[in-house]
Image 1 (cartoon, rainbow, N blue to C red):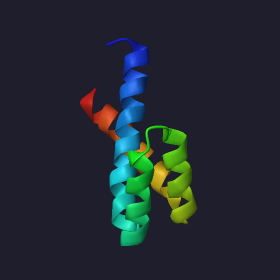
Image 2: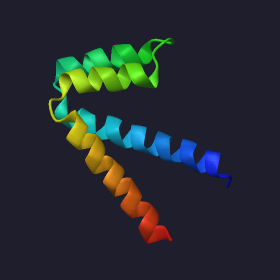
Image 3: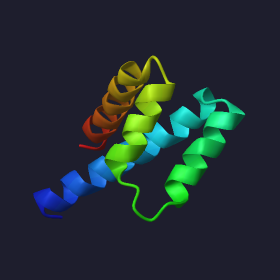
Image 4: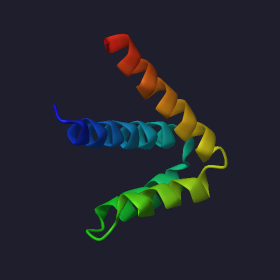
Length: 78
């Protein structure tokens, strides 16, 4: 797999992990807001991350934790 493909796949995996973890933190109302945002065709990854950051006070820590898990997963595979 070319390096660019690995980077894209890693970014997608990290994004998905952040979304899943965020669902455990968001209120039901905030989840509905997120669903509406995700249903909009013009929503970008940056829009979603910005929304999550505005709703989750510890968002930066959450991202760091998920990056660490992803990195550890790569190390254990090699």
